Length: 284
Image (cartoon, rainbow, N blue to C red; front, side, top):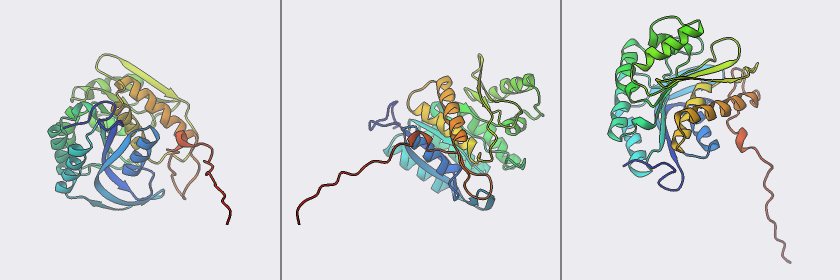
């Protein structure tokens, strides 16, 4: 049983399958904030608990795969799932478990995969066996894959510098099975251009690059916003366009928080004048 476009309960349901960020800027927390801001009901299946803040990750504890599967099943069988995304899947066993539940609940056409393979420092986050599980088990189920350039280089197995190289890599990665690929441009110079390839044509989504250190969780936020769009019935092109616009403004409106790389302003769409309570006075 799966959700229907528009929400079986009158509101679309989006599921994030990812790690928990105790600092709240990335992972499950960023995804749920994004879902809320974009008007979909957010549910979660936690794959790992991390102790981290704006300065970095201190500790990681993986959740057992049977518990991960149980979380996905609990959401799907009761709430339904109109759109979903994956984030931190730190082992081949976890990736295979998630892929199994996606197939079981027939959610492949609604799945956004944020590969989370390479840290901003350049460090590899997935062992080679996990990369192979990602490629063989999960990518063929993805409606949208959202690699940054270092992650695309791992998948394409070569360095990507020029525009032509990025486009050819998108074509090659498309052959691994996803219905569409968003080659994120945050690691490149110039304007922030994300390139969508759907197997037939390329779409370039550009925004002005903001000089800021408040970019923690941008990849999580973009993929969650795309999943929210799919949950509400948007096409992939429209979903990526709207997600790019939401993230660009969230980066622009972000203010410093913490002593390191701060989070984006997930709540910018929700900011409004404070509500005034109704006060009734009665005689003593």
